[in-house]
Image (cartoon, rainbow, N blue to C red; front, side, top):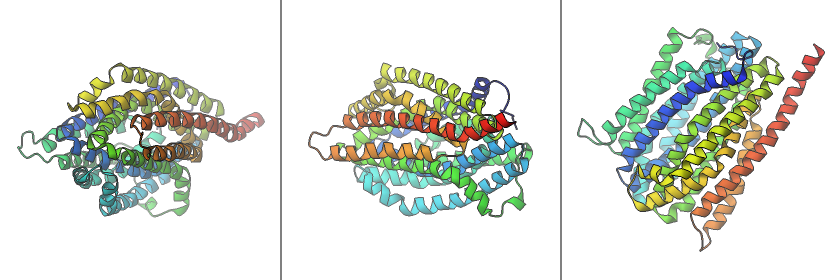
Length: 453
């Protein structure tokens, strides 16, 4: 356990964000390696894998329900010096992860085909997407165990073991990708099935490594069979914080489905261009996300320790750092967006779509950094409903106009990206003002308590 209630806030942010950023940079490399080999399979494969990958947002939503509640409540317990409650929360989180694993496998294999058929540009894209999803689902399901263990450690201020496991997991994936997708060394290329299988095998290895770490090295939170029986009251505490955060990602799934649906008439090349551009965007987002991910544990421990000034300082520091990183990434995407897309495909139409997407969408990077930071602060304060509200407003202000535009004869794909930029800016403003209100409401009792003491 690491005490984050004393010492320099900027130092804590850097010390927690740096290991996560390293892991995320390795993840960036994985994204790019995986994308490189899948892109060699053609437009239908790229579009299919991108479509199948959107199911990840549903899983991310469920893992957020699990992880956000775990980080927030364990960080509060650590701030109160209540190790027993931290242990109970960890074991209940682990139990919920096994339940979610089963739900993911049943839902994914049962409903995945119908979803892909509804948004795929053509039969080939749908077929490739379904093949990828079937092999990727075990890895998605195993993410819950990784999230439960990693979130418990993050709540106690420890991030290096998770980073090491993440790096090793991604390195395994990077090695397996060319072997399974392209048949390097074996002569048996599995195509998109190999991409999904590589991910599933690497995640399984990560779960084993994290389990070994907890059994041999971790002492503050640990496996306790007596605490693995369902505790409904504890579930309610966790889901009260985690449910809105998870619902955010469910809305992101809807958001992505809307985009794929409205651009489907432009063909598989358009969906492939958006898929490549989206992967590149996700990859370069990761350093800023590392800063935001450090926020809940730091602000959460100080909230639990009843130190409102340090909670506010955590937001100021994280927001400035995140905005600075996002501004630099904006410049990067305006410098040579076409070059970044062309590293993965040589098809002119795909490059054109991906280039325009990346150049326009980068205009909202700073705003997105503010949103990430506000979301982390909502988690730390134990109320994630405002973050869900801002995301819902963004979805409504995006989806309704873009569906209307898509029915016009003069509809152009660039209109989708312009509308996305505008709605992200709106979401950033809403998130900021909602956070100001939550800081005022949630920290007032702590300030009053400090004044009385």
